[in-house]
Length: 153
Image 1 (cartoon, helix red, strand yellow):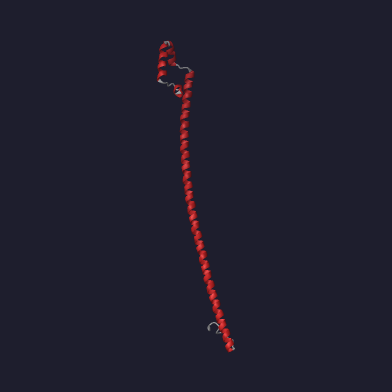
Image 2 (spheres, helix red, strand yellow):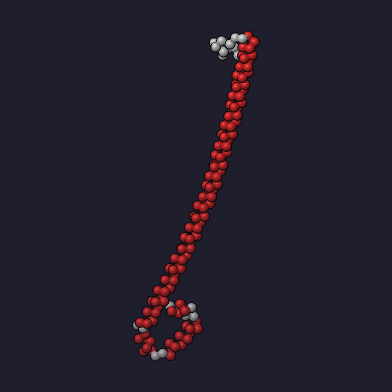
C-alpha cells in the first residue's frame, strides 16, 4: 500500500478526498500545477519506481538462485547415487576376484596333495623294489646288474 501511494496510486477514499481538495483549490493554481509538478514529487516517484524495479529484479534473482540451487542439489544427488552404484559394482567385482583367487589356491592345494600322494606312492614303490632286491641279494648272494635296474622291477 505504501509503495502504491509512493507511485501515485491510492485507494478509493483517498481518491475521493483528493477530488474534493481539488475542487476547493483555485483555478489559477490548477493551471500552474498541470504544466509542472514539484521536483520533490517527481523525485519521490522516480525513487519509488527505482525501488520497485530493484525489488522485482532482486526477487527474480532470488527465484533463479533457488532454481539453480535445486538443480545443483539434484545433480549432486544423481552423482552420489551413481558413485554408490559404482562402489557396489566394485565391491561385487572384488568379491568375484577374491572367490577366483581362493578357488585357484584351493586347486593348487589339491594338486599339491595329489603330487605328494603320487610322490609318496613312487617312494613306496621304490622302497618295495629295493626291499625285494635286497631280499634277492640275500637269497642269491649276488648284486643285481646295473643294466637291468630299470626293467626288472
